[in-house]
Length: 301
Image (cartoon, rainbow, N blue to C red; front, side):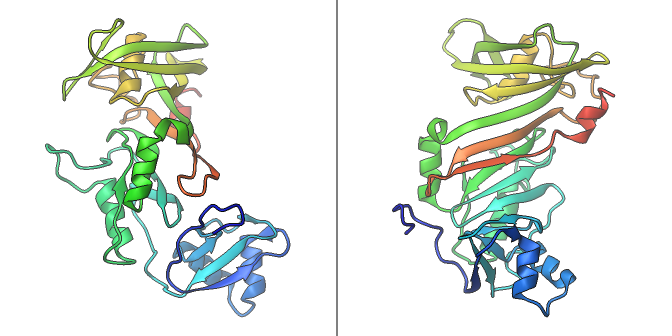
């Protein structure tokens, strides 16, 4: 237990641990503790995902360490390697994994679609460090949407996240490129959405659907496109895509709700770039952010 009574991450495979006594970058710290190891060897430890800072796997060589932090190096080398062209792990501890998913990868299987997904790929990774280890679904991103999402590593953490989602997740944002130049600098879209499996219908009045609210801010207008930042009060299926179409500015690359042949990027231009939440076990604020996709920016040059 921590001094404040909050639990720390569960003990994992045996490790060598070091206490940080003065501020420095992680690579500098490892070099001081392992003077016989080459820089290539130290980078290898990071890439193999066996270096932990305060119980979280850390691969960033210039990660800033502060006095009081604990650095651990797992002796169980080789179990934590992860490489996949459509999926990148940005954070992991004993309770959850935060990943950045590329467009084109399903989050989880559906009854109609049986294929490799972010869930199956990560499940195999988790099971390599112990046959009984499992992964649990918390939320989803559409196949064609890229960006940040998280999975739980035990059932209790999954329930905590799902049952308290709106209290735990305090900032979740998307960036999109939409057709046309948006009239307003900012606004709110509110409608009632009804999911008919293959298509989500939107009504401006309560027709029995689910109330859905999207806040939008226009970042840039140029070349017949608008770059938008979007925040959801609700997380309905296809919500952003439907609401942008409601405004008359569909997301480009959206053949379902938008303009079928307007696809200059060869993908749906929607990316979940920010995910901030209170850790479901320790209560600590966790903040993750990825850059806007580079190809989005090219349309405004």
